[in-house]
Amino acid sequence: MKSILRLLLLLFCFSVFSDAQVSASQIDALFASLQSNDAPGAAVLVVQNGKAVFRRGYGVTDLRSRHRIEAKTDFRLASFTKQFTAACIMLLVRDGKLQYDERLTDIFPEFPEYGRAITVRNLLNHTSGLKDYGELYMKQYPDTAPEKVPQILDAGVLKLLEIETSGEFAPGTKWEYSNSGYAVLAMIVEKVSGKSFGEFLHERIFSPLRMKNTLAYQKGKNVVPHRAYGHTKEKDEWKETDQSPTSAVLGDGGIYTSIDDLIQWDRALREHTLLSEAEMKPALTPVEPSGGPADYPSGKSVSYGFGWFLDPYQGHKRMSHDGGTMGFRTTIQRFPEDGLTVIVLANRTDVDPEEMALKVADLYLKADAPAR
Image 1 (cartoon, helix red, strand yellow):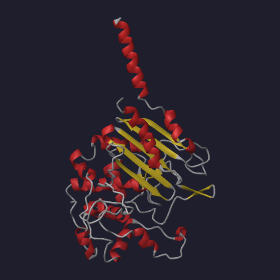
Image 2: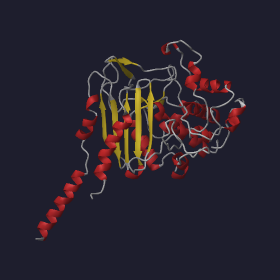
Image 3: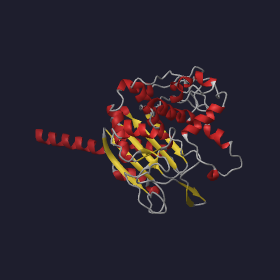
Image 4: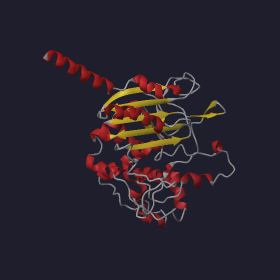
């Protein structure tokens, strides 16, 4: 009788364990529309409790070579880059070379007077009030097709902002997402470290973490290995739309990487390889503007630290960031208390990586939820 009960118990435990698993076919079903031999697609990574449990590519890197997207394929991260830019600043703070409350005019004495009220912290958490460099730049090229506009660099962004005499609002009083702020942060890294932004990233983050195929892309200076090119669908046909006038700005979105390399980044975040838990705390502390709650223009509230959105998802603690630029859409969704990370990198603009990543996350979060 005891043997039968033991067997039944084992069978019950096996059944519960099996039900808690997520199969590759379940994830494949979510990305079925991207499975193609002649269309751009995406790379998908799932890390659970420190282990990469799913790595797969869908579609092709470009329509010329039609190379299949693989785990080693490099995508432009767009604003997903910002967490790396923030990490550079945090490393300099740890080194004692920079402080979060240093003023912009302390670092760049030639910056106009309005920069005296802008701190490094304001730049990191999008409360600087700096004007949008994209709008400022394109005003210089009225009636010019975007493909005819030369690319601006981070240094050019800084110069544009130095022409201005004021920001959009008093620093620290409002939250407003700012690509300008992160371009300026890249220039701060260069000024304080004495190295180019790309060199600092490589020496302090990519090389130590063995992210061998990750880089800040600079045309004519380096080459993206296993490169995916961006695409946009126009009148039911795919068009390669890989670069825009702002694509050469590095601090706000210029990193290329793969899901293979992002496994190392996720591990470093989980194990505090680069920055200790205490050193990471400011990045994971939501900003509270003095003028009221942090809100999107639509009025929806937002929780943001340094390079990370911190809004919870269905009761689960979350740190995340999306990226969107000409031809690319990306997302990282981390659920630290659940030991789960989902990353989707796409080289097409007709998909919503965050929505797709959260559908994947749902499979795991529901599978791990205790039975009622």
